[in-house]
Length: 121
Image 1 (cartoon, rainbow, N blue to C red):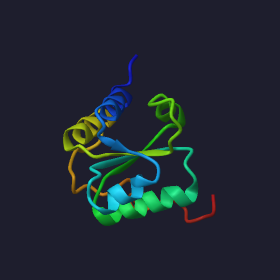
Image 2 (tube, rainbow, N blue to C red):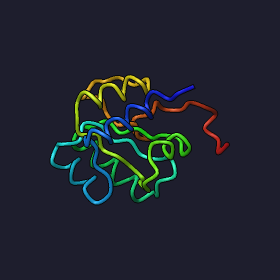
Image 3 (cartoon, rainbow, N blue to C red):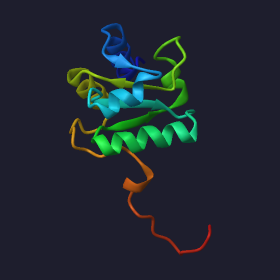
Image 4 (spheres, one colour):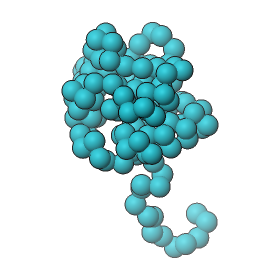
């Protein structure tokens, strides 16, 4: 089965509508990024920076499983920002997420509170 989200990201790369590497955080800060997709194997500091910058700019950020993320390209990357609103909407749709640009990024702060016995385990 083909992964439509991965295929959409690959099309955005071929169309030149993605940013990776040094320009990633800059694209988030200056508002060019419409969506950020990052690998589950990204370092904690990098993940924190991406999530914080995305939350500040109001850009959705989504984590992809390591294997799915590596299927995107042969070039090494830990994250991509999608700079085209059309591609971003299609990718969000294929990820099963809301294409609402005002939606908050998926972070631990946005998760619902967990209820339980209050114990450690």
